Length: 474
Picture 1 (cartoon, rainbow, N blue to C red):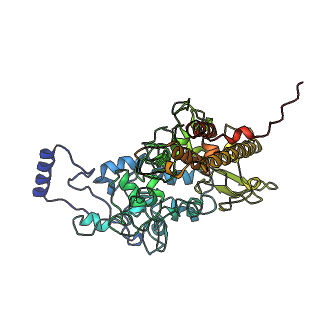
Picture 2 (tube, rainbow, N blue to C red):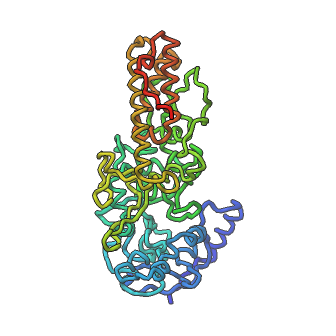
Picture 3 (cartoon, rainbow, N blue to C red):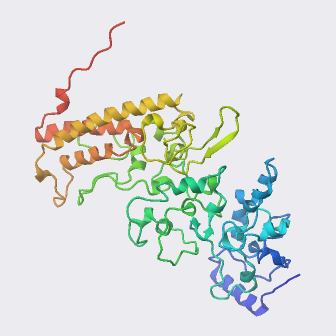
């Protein structure tokens, strides 16, 4: 039985500090440490539980706040979920217990895998932070703090992807082909303003999250990894998300914290829209011409209302299973972590990861979850919306081309009708605009054309459209 104690003098000093400060900034309790059983040699310095019945980890004896948070997560019940699944196999155990998975450890057989001891059941602190014995014995030793990693790495293997991968849970594989893993633009310099949405450390910093991790002091950049959106300790939001996805607020909705950037024209810039999806979905995006008769938020589709409570996540986290039509056997599970709402799929319906394909080769399964009756109905609605908006954009751009160049200025301290109309045309050409809010987009395009005619005397090309056939009377 190994046992260690803080010296009484140190305890007295710490108690005095706590009394003076009123509260401790960290969730660490300093006290005489409880007994814990020395780990087996084969465990390779992994400690596991100090009390298996109460799920008190050795780490949690001091880090009481993190212990309480962790106990509310699915990780704390990982072993039970495996045992009760009816499909428990030895090959599954390493991901449902403390092992080398999830942390940078060279040895494969450590923790539960090497000992089969119940103290290592469940995905505990050390699953991500690595073996804790050295830290527990001497927590003040410089550099002796077992930080977790936010990387999703194959060399060396570590991070969430070591377990959240494979045929049944290909989160890492689908993420690796997504734009979160390969964000457009440069993320080479984590100090640039773009890093707030294009780089992992930059995003966490922008969101006020100051948790320490292995990469904290590194200049190396990382894509938007699992730990950016998911909090490993906190289960306040479903799926341990750092912020809710069902909150229609640009400041607090997880997706919209990045997908809300330039949604309206700027006086000093000629740049077009940049990541305006959140405001567009909620009916706030675009340049509202003086003649526009609808106030912000009044034009929204069902995608941006209470009928779609999860908002962006409903379509962009498209999860479903595919079974063999002949045998009914499981074939593939789509996790939605490609973040493609209508992904390109093969003949079996398995996402290919391709960015472009014929619309008939795209899956609209996410659209049938309580909204559209069939995939074909959703596909038809999108085709119709795209055609309508494309024609209006062509008409508007034809009018914009006739406006004098002097109306496009970044130094006159105003948004001219020409500039606002051009912004609306660019907004309408955004890939998701015909889905996110076709009603607002159409209204903005038509109002822009009417305003151009009013301000510049340029006749609307819509007036020259051939008459549309009328439905024959019944």
